[in-house]
Image 1 (cartoon, rainbow, N blue to C red):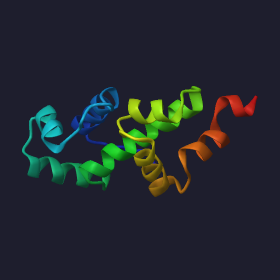
Image 2: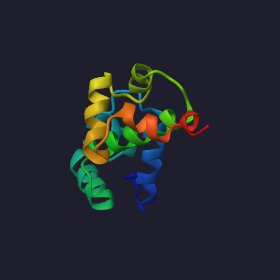
Image 3: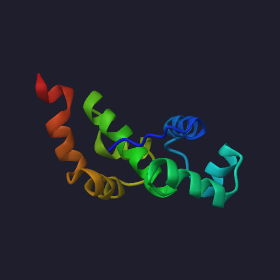
Length: 116
């Protein structure tokens, strides 16, 4: 489920994305961060991760939300906002694609407080 890239520049970009998840991460923002054309960036992103830019950002947001659900008791709406989903419904749809579960179900199964 994790977005990984053996390519050093994309790894650095993914770290930057993780630090800026609540921002609007459009193609132009990411290509400016990489100093690349949109076409070159799209090709390199897909080649390195197998994902489009939008799917890669979505996956990084889901990973961050999963960590917050496991490590905190933040409300779902706060996690959605903090991870850049905009709404809890958008986050729910993003969870369903790769995980086949909702954020609430994920929290119930994997949160630290539920194992105590």
